[in-house]
Length: 271
Ligand SMILES: NC(=O)c1ccc[n+]([C@@H]2O[C@H](COP(=O)([O-])OP(=O)(O)OC[C@H]3O[C@@H](n4cnc5c(N)ncnc54)[C@H](OP(=O)(O)O)[C@@H]3O)[C@@H](O)[C@H]2O)c1
Image (cartoon, rainbow, N blue to C red; front, top):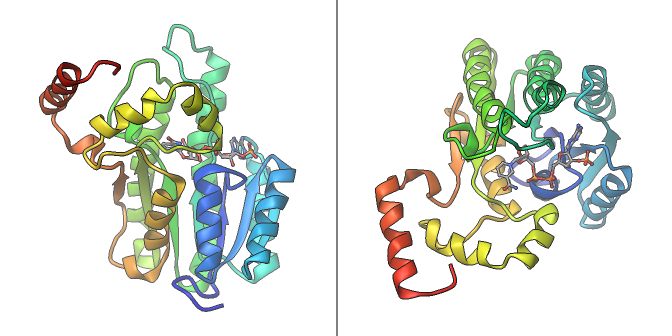
C-alpha cells in the first residue's frame, strides 16, 4: 500500500482505544502493517477489523505491558508476522493519580512498570530487529506532565518525566545504528475514556478554550499526526526530541495565563 509509511511494520502498545487507536488507524492508512495491542481483546479485534475494512493491514496481539515476557512476545509476533520491525510506539498506560501520602508502594511499582519499565523493555526487544533492518523509529508517549507538575499526579508526573530522558538516552546510544527515538507530550486529549467525564463537566471544554492558546482541547488524531511525522523518514534528522502536542499549553507564562483567566472571569460568569 502506498503512503508515508508504505510497507513499514509498526507496533503500537495501548492501541485498543484513544491515542494509540487513532495512531494505528492513521499509520495503516499511510501504508504500514500495524500490530494493534492492549489487554481488551474485543476492542483490539474491532480496531483491526476497521483497519482491514478500510483497505489497511493490521493484526491484534494481546499483551499486558506490566509483564516483560509479553512485551517480548509482542515484538516477536510483529517480526514473525511481517518479517521485521521499523516502528515502535510505547504508548500504553493506565494507573492511579494521587498524592504521595495516598499512593501505596505497590501502586507506585505497577505504574512505573506499565508507564516506564515497559518502554525500556520495548526498546530493548525492538532495537536488535530494527538494527537488522538498517534502522527504525521509536516513539514514547509522554505528556505535558513529563515537563511540568500538577496537583495529585504522582506517580504520573514522575514516570512521564522519566520517559523523556529515557528517550534522549536511547537516542544517544543507538543513533549511529539508524535508530531514532522521540517522545510526544500531549496536553489534554479527549479519548473514549474521558467522554463521560466531559458530558458531565462540559465546562472542561469551555475552560480549554480559555487556557489553551489554540482555543480548544486536543483529540487523538492531533497526536496521531505528530506520531506519523516522527515515525516517517520525513523526520530522519530528528532524534531525542520531546515534541509538545499541547495547543500551546506549556509555552504560556503562568502570569500571562492568570491574566487570561482573570479577564475571562470578569467578562463571563460560569467558569
Ligand atoms: N488523554 C490524554 O489527555 C493524554 C494526555 C497526555 C498523555 N497521554 C498518554 O497517552 C497514552 C494513551 O492514553 P489515552 O489517553 O489514549 O488513554 P486510553 O484510551 O485509556 O488508552 C490507554 C491504552 O493503554 C492500554 N493499556 C493500559 N494499561 C495497559 C497494560 N497494562 N498493558 C497493555 N496495555 C495497556 C489500554 O488498553 P487495554 O485497556 O486494552 O489494555 C489502552 O489501549 C498514555 O500513555 C497516556 O498517559 C494521554
